[in-house]
Length: 147
Image (tube, rainbow, N blue to C red; front, top):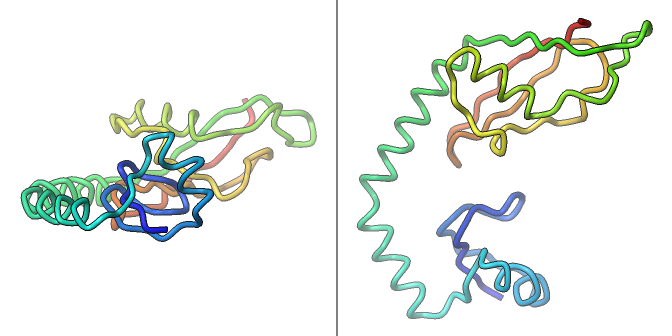
């Protein structure tokens, strides 16, 4: 089944992309949740016209994302966490703490676009991936220290 995505769907695609999915996934999840519409010929023509009209706006958004990525390339974060005597964190460090640390440095980045490869449950050095745009991804190193 071909669908046009109305919003970004993790591990599937980005807004305004045409994707192929299984019938059940499309009819039972994506369409009822208003995340996609069926890709009819009329919908494809509307999408094509919309993309033509928004081309310069999309280029500006990508340029802004590249500017932010360039400034984030030199950033290194230190996040404090309560730990046991063995260095294990009580709980874990998530994208919320990383977004808070970035906001203290003056970068307002949504926590939804910050991804961690594995849960951070020990003191050490890690990297967070920030997807600013579908073509602009930056990795920010951060260190978890004991408070």
